[in-house]
Image (tube, rainbow, N blue to C red; front, side, top):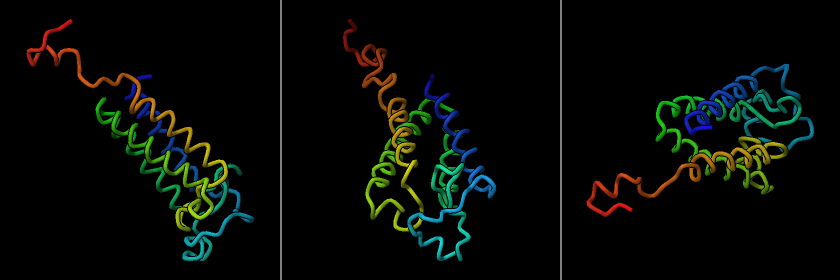
Length: 154
């Protein structure tokens, strides 16, 4: 899969997931979950629950998914922007995955739930994104650059 296809696929998937998180019938209430400040600030109406009964989400979490999704769709326009998107996504979701493993940070300072199944999902997204952002097709100097600058070619 080319990096542009990756960016578009991730963009579409995260946009759909972001939208699904706003559909109340798909979100089970978070009854025995860590406390969130956003839940208190909005009188418990922050959409806090488990998407499909598996992934902890709230309104802020859904909004982040929509932003990531829109960014992926926009990044699809060029290979360079797709590679930057993939690399940035690798770092961002890697950080979120690690935060999900740390008890005091697994709710992003009380705003966004990052625990449970979100940890492996975020770390998996980071790993795949790292492949497309940093490993696949990466070269420090394009082959034609040597000839352009007078260096002998092999």
